[in-house]
Amino acid sequence: MTTMETGQRAADARLTRRAAAAAAIGVLAAPSVLHAQGAGRPIKIGFVNPRTGPLAAFGEADAFVQEGLARAFSGGIRIAGRNHPVQILARDSQSSPSRAAEVASELILRDKVDILTATSAPETVNPVADQAEVNEVPCLTTNCPWQPYFFGRRGDPAKGFDWTYHFFWGLEDVIAAFTDLWSKTETNKVVGALFPNDADGNAWGDARLGLPPALAQKGYRLIDTGRYQPGSNDFSAQIAAFKAAGAQIVTGVMTPPDFATFWTQAGQQDFRPRIATIGKALLFPSAVASLGDRGQGLTTEIWWSPHHPFRSSLTNQSAAEIGAAYTQATGKLWTQPIGYQHALFEVAADVLKRATALEPEAIVRAIRATDLRTVAGPVKWGSGPVKNVAKTPLVAGQWRRVAGGAWDLVVLANPGAAEIPVGGSLEPLG
Picture: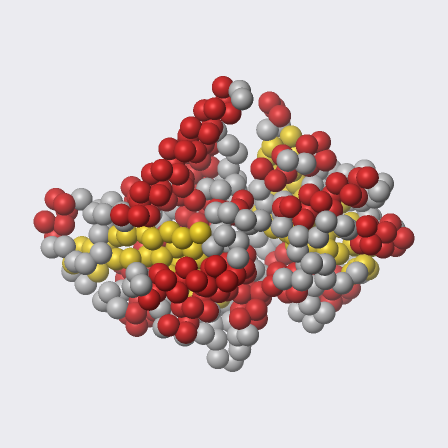
C-alpha cells in the first residue's frame, strides 16, 4: 500500500468515526446557547442512504457531508421562539428497497423522527417516501429522477401526495442534455439502449413517457432489446443486437457493476461505439477509474459539480469550495451526490426554521412554501410538473484524465441551464 493510499484510508476512517458518532448521539446545540435561548426538545431528522451494496457509491461522501452538518447545526434550530438541538439519525439502506422500508419504519415508529430524508435512486427513495406517506410524517427526498419517484409510487398527477416532497430533475432534462451532447459530433443516430428491470430502467425505457418516444421524435433509432435483470453477468445478446444495427451511441441507466460488466464484454466482442452516455453508473470517479483506460471519454449526466455557480444557504460555501474541502478531507475527487446531500439538509433546515411549530402539519406547510437557493440550485415547490416535485438544473459532460492520472468531469452540454458554464467540446470514443 502506498503512502497516499494509507493517508486516504486514514482520512476516510476519521470521517466515518465522526459521522457514526454524530448519527448515534445526535448533533447537539452548545449548552451555553441552550441556556441563553431556552432549550426545546431535540429535533430528530432521519436520513436513509445506501452505504453498502451496488449503490454504495451514492453514499461515498456521507461521512464528509455529515461532519459538515454537525458544525452547521451545532447551534441548533430556532422554532417558534425556542432553540432546539438537532439530531441526525443516519441509516444504511444497503441498496435494498426492503431494507430502506425497514429502517424508515424504525425511524418513524421507534425513533419518532420529526422529518424523514432520503437520497439515491428509487431503490432507497421510494420505499422511504412510501413509509412516510402512510405514517403521515414529513419527508424530503432527492437524487432520483422525478418520474420514477412519482409514477414509481403510483402517484396521481391530479392528486399528488400529502406528506412526501422531492427535488431533482426529470427524464425530459436527461433527454435534452443527452441529445444536445450527441449533436456535437457526427453519428448515424442509431442508439443501443440498456434498461434494467428496476424502477429507473422501467421509467427510462417507458414507451410512453421515457426515452423511446422522445428520441424517435428527434430522429434517433433506438435498439431496445428489453429489460435485463440487474446483476446480469452476460450482455452478449445486447452487444450482438447493437453491432447488427450499427449502433454508434449507447445509452441507458445502470449500476456501476452492471456497466463495468457490459463495457468489459463490449471491448472483448469488438463493439466500439462513438459515444457511450450512461446514467447512474458513470456519475462517480471511483466507478470510472475502475475501468482504467476504457473510462476515458465516457459521458453522463451531471447533477452537480464544483463548476456549478451556486452557494450553500447553510454555510455560504460555493460549490467549488465544497468540492475542494472534500478532496482535502479524503484525498479523493469530488463526487456528484455531495451537492444534493448537502442541499437536502439545506432544505430541511430552511423548512424547520420557517415552521410555526415542531409538529407534522406545520412542517409540511413550510415544505410547500419553500423558495430556497441551495448549492445544487433553486428549490421551489408549486411550479413543478406535479404537486410534490421541484425541478433542479441538469447538464451533461465527459470524463477525461487530467495531470497526475486523476479524472475530471467536463461540462459539455447545458440546454436549459445556461448559468452552468460549458468547459469544452465532445471528444468521440472512436
